[in-house]
Length: 546
Ligand code: VG1
Ligand code: CO
Image (cartoon, rainbow, N blue to C red):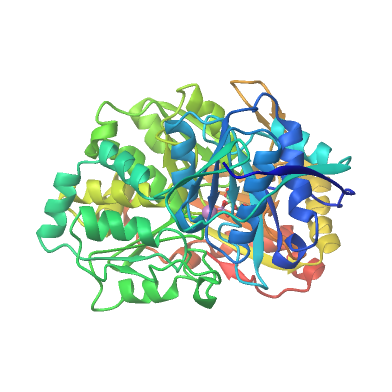
């Protein structure tokens, strides 16, 4: 057993350690300040109770600063009395794999070191969040308690020990705490094998089905290679950018049409394989592109819910579907037809946890490329890909045809999101304030000939623990199911990001194949005008359209 003296280090609070949509995210340089990470880790522990002698999983997406941060977290866990930590080899563990480990080994909880879809590298972002014993992101009750601790912290505890060798599998110790370095992929692959019919999926690839999976030099490379090219027999080279790199190869690991443009171009071109997919920095998001057709995440959730029976785990049916408020209502239509429950929650996976734990829903999804099920308590990029493949194999139809069939059955929710990044925080706040002030007068009025039926600042009452979350985004609802939503991002690290979500329902079978931006043009114009976006931000165009 290695000796380890416990050191108590005096410290002072840092401003602004408030967890956002998914943990604390800041630029790497902020996290590199002495005591910054330590203060937050200690505040997590100080906000929790009863972990002495228990196990903690520590996951990381491999980005710059990951290894240093893991060493710190491990030594602090030892000093604070944990009995054991489980860490992925090389400090790598995807967010869904971390959630699985917490559940599978019934650990006390886990710490995830990731800024997820945010850019990485020395000039990029870093992040940290706490997941509870159900495997899910800490609910607001806990994140509020952590934040409160960050404001009064005066000391942290850390073991004075040598760095652990993150690359060598096996168990070592720091003082009385065991440190187990494990293969980050094995347990996750076993879980996928339980949920899906690997034999059928192998058959799909054996029949000549071709796919491209862009791991974006982020965490899912080893997972996708092991499962797709290994277990399922997809051709070598199916997984591209498969080696996790601290700077993601200089790219931005956000699987959308801007940052996964190479994949998009391939899928729209003449040599497109049958199916294209990508995932983000920490492996919880997914991008799905059929041959010649991008599948919006909102549509993807609806298609997966409608076709769940094609995977063994869901043959008995699904209990319900939950979607974040800005996500399109396409999934609601499926739920209505299946006669199952559907819920609308605030943005962020933490709000799905109670619904999943209570068995009220089986599938959850967000418009931001997140989909998942009750198999874990995080969204899961590769899971979504494997479910899509199961449906493709089961229906013997390509992704694009499956989606078009879906529209013919349910109608189409045209959907787009405009992001204005790095806006001056005061100006962004001004946009929201101005909208809030007009809420009462909007219902009954007309915008570009469209009648507003309701407008509010979204609040959510959790049906399980009866907690209430307020200020979750401005909704403007129109006759016929069209909708504009405005909210400020809770994951950005520079200035403020305004997100505008625009949706229009189309039931006319002759109008299902329009170009999205064309179909939404009047609504987009109304959204920009109502939000006074150009006047208030000085921006003539959004930074990203998805
Ligand atoms: C964004 C998305 C949200 C998602 C969150 C974390 O949050 O909109 O749907 O849950 O990122 O995703 P925001 O507050 O910036 O809109 V991940 O993959 O970065 O953990
Ligand atoms: Co992510």
